Image (tube, rainbow, N blue to C red; front, side, top):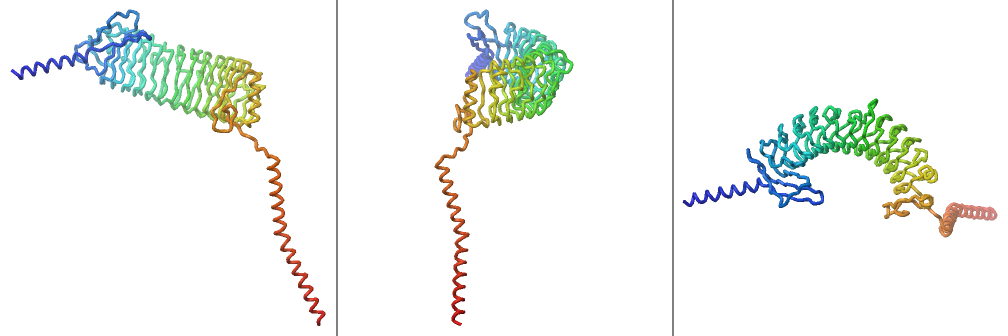
Length: 450
């Protein structure tokens, strides 16, 4: 009797525990207008629909999101009624779940998903059948996985996809974007992979933002005779680019933001930016560039911000381009000792800020430079070299000035050395001469006695 009673209590406890695991609590985010159902450490069972706690009131205009996190599900495979209660949800987050692959029709009951997060899993390949059910998907995040391969037409059924994040994976090669079915993507992040080259002729015409930070890219191929691109933001910083062909940015007519910082560039072709007549922000910092070719920015009429800091420039020529709209110029941490202030302010009539710290300016000359910029309504930003000789935090070098007292002490020292030299050289000669005269007199006296 007692044993039967104990078994009954155990079964009740297991049922309660199971029920708690399967019913997910909700969170209300008023600011972002979201109702988030968070299922953590959930155990899925066959033919058991996933349930959630109903909010206390209706949130008609709120976006509904389902989060399945910290749950081990190597294969995303759900039965037909697993997501029945979430048919109207538009956001799904399956992260930190050890996910390795996705079964076909895994999202069949959630075909209204517009945003899908599959981050921090173990997915190694993107198969062509993974997202076939998600015809209204707009934002897909596959970052922080182990992806090495993407099947052809993997995204062909996702015709409304506009944002794709593939950062922090293991991609080595990248084919034509159209071969993957990426016809409508506008924002794509491929940073922190293992790419060694990028062919800008392979990007789709709709792409507007392409991020390629922290790869191993050493080759950038241009678009050649391709049609104009919609690309407006290209980030190639923190790669291994040592050389660029003059035509590699051809047909990027709409490019406004280009980041080439922290590569291995030591020179630039003078026609490198000739096609970028809409460029506004250009970052060339952290390279080894020794010179900006004359006229390199002649086509960059709308350039507003130029950063050439942390290079090896020894001079800044005002004929580098027509900087009529340049607003901010950063030349920090170079080898510059002279700058044509008047030429720059006459050329860059909209210039408002200049950063000069970390160069080879003499302090008196730097004061003159700052005054000249100030007289033309240009602010020299304060530097960070406060522990060294500086002007407003901008490091500089003082000329050695010899005072009159210092000059007198040098003269005395020279005279003293001269006297010592005379004594050392003359006194022995005088002594020797004296001995010679004395010896001569002694011999004379001896001859008289004889």
